Length: 323
Image (cartoon, rainbow, N blue to C red; front, side, top):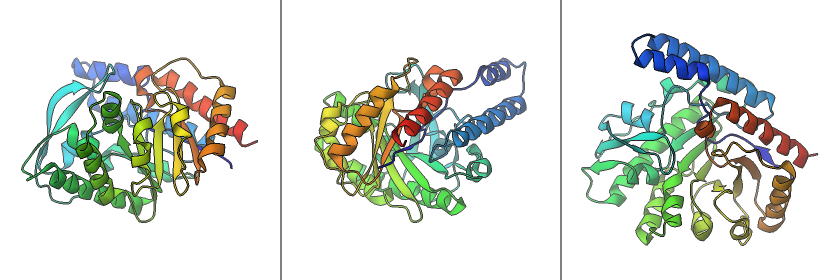
């Protein structure tokens, strides 16, 4: 089997973009200059992904700061709430305030993505929040139950996914950090797993594209059996948090498997041979439809140069494996 490779989230911003944003915040620069630099940097990272031979091309997300921002700022019935830490990272997000039920609406990601550049000579992947993570990391009102809320969120995310696919995207990744973190903390309940299953049951299959549920920031080992039952094409596992021994216990027949063996939050570069051996072990033991190598999360946590080095390592390991 030949493996594939791709990036899975926000890219670290350049010093030039950081400076432009600081100047704007202090009243010495303009929003126009920020947008110009963000576009320039995005075009560079899109180009580098294609040159590296990555199988899916993502937008590096320089035009927004956190996963929920397009949803919070553009969906009617949702507003931006208080700032909180994004799990155990030195970055922040703003809790969405959801006054439900929400009407189905699409196009809320459009202005943040470089769709035209992504679709040129590449297979574009869109990244959306999973209904479950969106639910538990938001302040939600107006629903009779959590199940009703996650169902509504799943419907909206499905509509947006289908809208993106109609523009030419061929992969939709749903980001699901919350379920893995809850599992790691020993706080996961049967209700959590039910809500995850309910949400993905709505949006997990998208006509015209493959889908992935990307878990990260936590050990998913104990819930892999539950993840395998979800109506989703691919399961993404954080290989820096989840033991390889827990992964190889399972048969992924009928599913694609994405392994986040590159630590996006660590500037050290992994040994390519070690990754190669881990990939071969997983392939031989788990029988996936397709095997993918990725960073465990977005590379935003350690900056632009670090992200490029991880991208280059990703391409190198893919080439070594497929020789």
